[in-house]
Length: 378
Image 1: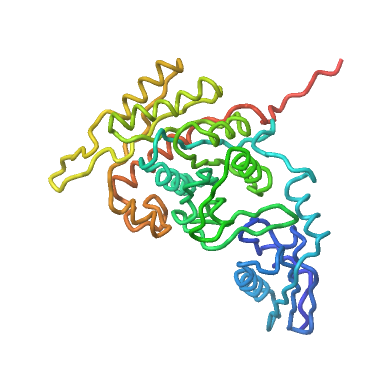
Image 2: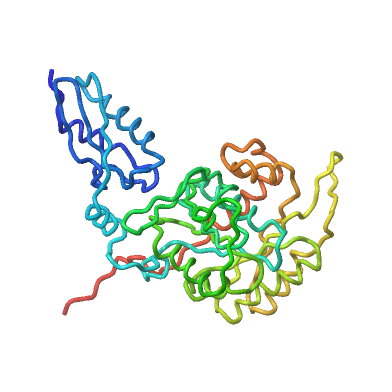
């Protein structure tokens, strides 16, 4: 019996590109199908010759086409898109030929949160990585931009194992733990090489990560910011004026005082501070008591002082305990708040999930939403 070619194409429609998250035929990645009795050959065009996921795509094509009635064998031949095909794909995905920052468009519904701190060492990147996977665990589509250009660490923390791919200058971000999309300058420099840039270079890198990266349809974009109120904070305020600020501090008063400064930048940038996270809040003891290694009250102090300064409530959203598993998860690329975490029921994981729940339940504004109204014709 001869295999129905239409049935093969229908099966290929169930093969999803792992990074772009769209069916292969929709992306123009199927160049042709040959049917010889029960033997099927599929020609797949990759976006780049060195695509690290070509084995995954091959296996998925063989699996789906192999389910078609009368198919006895499936052969997948790999090719590469021409420059013209890549250009067409870029325009199809972005909807335009010119590069623009999608998060500043009037119809954009992605919530952008800049996770910042006054000083380094308070666990800002750990909070960002865990918050990302916790949000993804609630069914949201999440991306993380590692804006800490000098001290990037997000790729390791989110288990990114391969480099981004490029389609006609458009960067396709790799997928990390629990489906979180990730981009970082660390993906573009040799291991161990320092980044020695001044302000204009930092600004250009951030602009490229926002405009040239195909983020797709995200519910939430988290920015892992460098500590302080320097060049990157100023650039983000210019490039993403709608970004909200989430402040991370420790209970230590010295750290809290510096954290207040990172929040007070909102008085000049007109961004909104949505809350404070107190990290390393305490260490749980075997008898159920709490050992406050870094003191107490820092998060509440930052919350109260910023509320008085900004004129609106800045809540203390979470108090995350010290936990060895939190550090281990960051080193292994499987954060403690991830689905496959080795310590999913810990107090630390639960607090991070509560934090994600508070942010995920935040109502979206009406900007960009169709209201279903029409003018009355007279």
